[in-house]
Image (tube, rainbow, N blue to C red; front, side, top):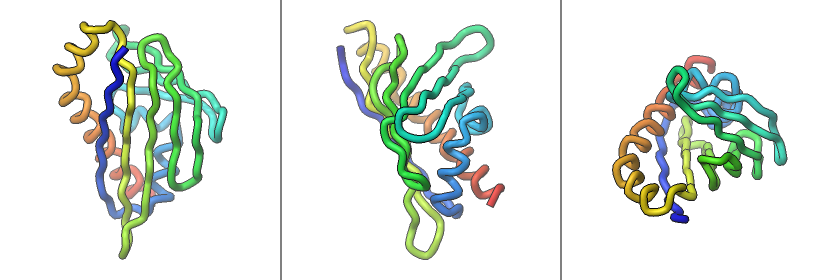
Length: 145
């Protein structure tokens, strides 16, 4: 099994706690995370379930929250058959206002050499989708300020 890491971050005018509030409103994920719907609880040990796909083509991503610092950090362990590993979001205030938002993933690739070859092709598009999602997230957080 191969482990890969990927991350994306953005800055915004919205306060970190507001971004975190929108970020952890799981049903709102469909508003900002490309091709994904989510539901679940809050706090360490709570379960999350995401569905990523278009129409009937997609996969379910089950997760457990492993860290929860309100307004600042949420981390999960991916426990599904296809997606395994860890992910986290961090929000941090900036001097003078606004905040930064980081989304990071450390994933165990499935399918051995085929998974590694696929990652070479998918890494850039995945990061582009992460950035798109973060930009949508901070727009939502700013709009609900």
